[in-house]
Image (tube, rainbow, N blue to C red; front, side, top):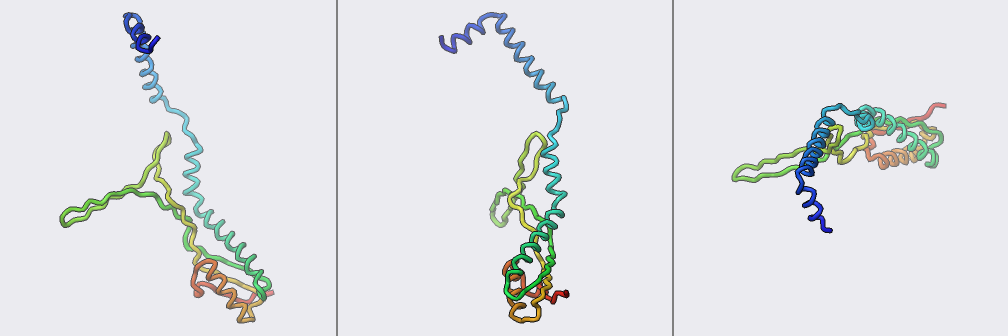
Length: 179
């Protein structure tokens, strides 16, 4: 039996057609009613989004502390540094860069650019698509070490920190650690 034959038999009778119309109408009514009933919102997505905005300060603190620990361990390995304490300053917190799409229209004497954020959405609403997340920017470093008396050690420390964080030596201060 072909599918066309089955549908043909169902639609031939008046009772069958009325039943199909009633079922279709009932389905549409259920869809309309379900859209009117407030559903339980998923708290996970809302909390994650809120977490991204509320923890940027905590993230920069974690980033700074992690940088201090790693730098301290690294500097201890340099010959002549001895005991060391490190303080790192951070200029900014995490920065979100959102994806944009745009078009350019060139006419006779004008050039028009139109850019919009790329939006993603679900049942909880729309949000901008995050393209990249920039790490906090380290702006300065203070180092206290017991090997401060040696100019060679000072030069090693300045160059190491400058290279590691890509900051100029003027943003680094090295002093003698008091015991």
